Structure formats: C-alpha cells, structure tokens
Amino acid sequence: MKVPLQITKQEILTFYKLINPLTHKGIQGHAVIIGGSYGKMGAAVLASGACLKSGCGLVTAFIPKSGYAILQISNPEVMVLTDENENFISGINLKIQPQAIGIGPGLGQEKQTQQAFLEFLNTNKSPLVVDADALNILSLNKAWLSLLPENTILTPHPKELERLIGKWGSETEKFENTIAFSEHYKAIIVMKGAPTFIINQSKIYQNTTGNAALATAGSGDVLTGIITSFLAQGYSPDHAARLGVFIHGLTADIALPETGYQSFIASDIIKNLGKAFLSLDS
Ligand SMILES: NC(=O)C1=CN([C@@H]2O[C@H](COP(=O)(O)OP(=O)(O)OC[C@H]3O[C@@H](n4cnc5c(N)ncnc54)[C@H](OP(=O)(O)O)[C@@H]3O)[C@@H](O)[C@H]2O)[C@@H](O)CC1
Ligand SMILES: Nc1ncnc2c1ncn2[C@@H]1O[C@H](COP(=O)(O)OP(=O)(O)O)[C@@H](O)[C@H]1O
Ligand SMILES: [Mg+2]
Image (cartoon, rainbow, N blue to C red; front, side, top):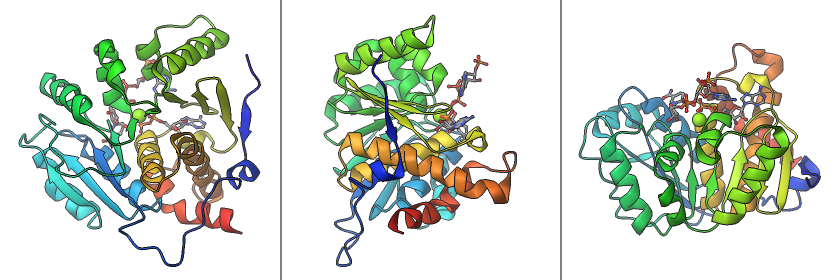
C-alpha cells in the first residue's frame, strides 16, 4: 500500500485560502444541510451550526417539520426549510441550488426517507457530502451508489464503512477494498477513526490532528457541516475533505487542556473552530 501523505499544517497552508476583506455572504457560498428526525434533530443543529462557523456565507437546514422551532432557536443564523412530514424526511424540495449539500446527520432510515433520498439523487446537481444514515441507506440500496456525482465525499465511521464495502480481514484489506470502492465510484472516502484517513482513488492522506476527546456523540455530524462549508466556499472536494478533517481534529487538540477527554462534547468542536482557524492565520 502506498505511503499516506500526512495532512499537516504546512501541507494545509499550500491551499488554505485567507478570507478576502471585500467578500460578502453572497459569495462566501450557500450550503444546505439535509437531516434530522424525531429525537435526532441535534445532529442537524450541530451540522448546520458547524457549517456556518466554518466560513460559508449562508446555511439552510432542510429538516422534518417537528424540528422547525428547535433549529430556529438553536441556530437563528441558519435558515430553515421543512419537510411536509413531522418526524422524518419524506420529500426533499429545496427550490434552490446551493454550492454544496451535506446529507445524512440524524436522517433515519424510514422507507419514505429512503425514497426521498433516491429522488434527491436523481435530481441533485450540487457537490455532495454523504454521512451517517444517508450512507446506511446507500448500503441498503447499493445500486444507488452509481447515482452519486463524481467526487462526492463520503464520511463513514468504521461500522458505516463495513456496511458499505463489506467486512475486511485485515487493515490492508480494508484499505485495498476502500481504494477499489473509491476508484469504482470516483468518490472521496473519509475513513473516520484514530487517525482519520482520506482515500481519493490512488491518493491516500493521513490526518495528523485530533484525539480521543472526539469519541463523543455528534462529532461526525459536526465534521459533515465543516466539510460541506468548505465545499460551498469553492474548495475542491479533495481540499475540502483534507482541510475539514484537519480543522475538526485541531479543535479537539486546542480544547483538550481545558476540557480533558471526558467532558469534551461535539459542541466544543464548534466552540473552538475560531481558534483553529486563527492558528492557521498566524
Ligand atoms: N444528537 C444527535 O442527534 C445524534 C445523532 N446521531 C445520528 O444517529 C444516527 C446513527 O449514527 P451512529 O453512528 O450513532 O449509529 P451506527 O451507524 O449504528 O454506528 C454506531 C455503531 O457502530 C459500531 N462501531 C464500531 N466501530 C465504531 C467507531 N469507531 N465509531 C462509531 N461506531 C462504531 C458500534 O456498534 P458495534 O460494533 O458495537 O456493533 C456502534 O454502536 C446517524 O444518523 C447519526 O447522525 C449520532 O451522530 C449521535 C448524536
Ligand atoms: N479515539 C479517537 N481519536 C481521534 N478521533 C476520533 C476518535 N474517536 C472518534 N474520533 C473522531 O470522531 C468522529 C466520530 O464520528 P461519528 O462516529 O460519525 O460520530 P457521530 O455520528 O456521533 O457524529 C470522527 O471524525 C472520528 O474520526
Ligand atoms: Mg456519524
């Protein structure tokens, strides 16, 4: 197996863009987060909040109706569109074509949600990040994988990866099978773990930031928001994935002396995004 390229600060700085003083929210990118279901609206709150705090200009959350007040109160800066259904997504009608879409956090796997996801895949034209239950729905309907646009970013944790590509007998086999999957679907796979690797066909990257504080509910939902934000800001999918995992892990490294491992929660990633960006600017 090829030696992975280490994702370091030095490497990130070769493509990280400083914000133009003359920018405005209309050119900083509009991202949409599609997710949430009854009892898991928090995933959409976390992903959409992280998305906005990673620099894009506008964020819209598309969620089931019962999440409306939750989202508007939790993240007043995030605009909201709601599904007709109260408790889960049953039909995705965005009426806008954003620069990037992140789908999956808290989505659930209801039959109607699966059908809605299929219709979305048949009509979507925006660059895509697919996570969590959207990955699980693809694992249940593997023929739909061919509907993913080229360079879609998938962000599975190990169990989600196993559901997608099947069981592996060794780490080497896991990488070989993920590389084959990436090449077949021309998809970028963020293999979340300790550490996280990114497979972009023949290219393999290894993240150098993050720690066990990230082993907490919602930290992957936050990563989806971060990567979707960078896509919406015009980073290539390869750069958006690399910058996303780097910044995501960096927040945990920055927060650790304050929070320790146990009391770090996914919201702390969002709280420390500012310090993470500033550490790149210095
Ligand atoms: N606040 C909210 O709204 C939240 C909403 N959330 C939403 O919930 C939905 C389900 O997502 P999920 O990841 O929680 O469940 P699932 O896909 O079943 O995987 C978990 C199972 O996989 C296994 N496993 C093995 N290794 C693993 C590893 N390294 N990292 C992780 N798992 C590993 C292990 O099972 P075991 O190996 O023990 O059988 C483990 O029990 C999804 O839409 C998500 O967005 C959550 O984000 C939480 C906060
Ligand atoms: N021990 C660890 N060290 C470093 N990063 C970790 C560790 N455990 C989990 N993570 C990171 O935390 C995130 C967990 O994602 P995920 O399981 O999807 O969380 P959730 O679905 O609850 O939001 C991933 O980015 C993963 O790389
Ligand atoms: Mg997850």
